[in-house]
Length: 225
Image 1: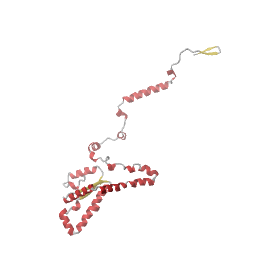
Image 2: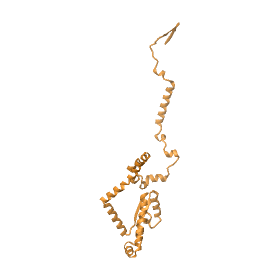
Image 3: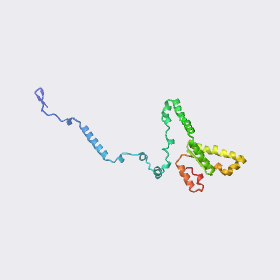
Image 4: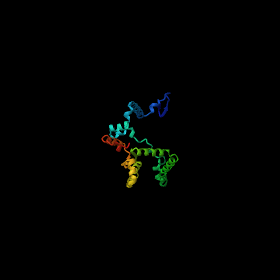
């Protein structure tokens, strides 16, 4: 406390100190109170109301067909297959090729090395191919059909196996009447139709095939899976 006596200003201590909170600006106190109230209100709200998913932002509702596909059509969900995953050798191809074109191409071409290593393993242990050949032989002799199918590049290969290898081979045999007479007697006149190559890749294809089959007597010629 200050006391003025004449021309002199004397400072007198009263022995009491001002409380510390008095020096805090009023606006800061108000801010702290409001922030505390907002925090309490946010904690009282359910967790679901504080989050908004992408469908809500886009104004889209989940269709019954989509739910049925996710929940029940698991046999058509292919995203977990090995062939649908990233190749370890090309994991960072997009980043590498931005700064090093030659190195990026080297990474890309290195994937073909897997073909050589796989053929080497098959040559070292041919039991799988031998069993496959035996099953194909049994199917042909028993007048059964053979289905070859795949997605993407393997699907095109499946179609090529039918149109480029199988059918042309039997058509060439048919030109020789001496040989064809024996083949026809042993394997039947429709041996050319016994191998079918199909390209799949969309989940709707097997479903469409099933719908076609339900109204057709020859289901074997229409269902590939």
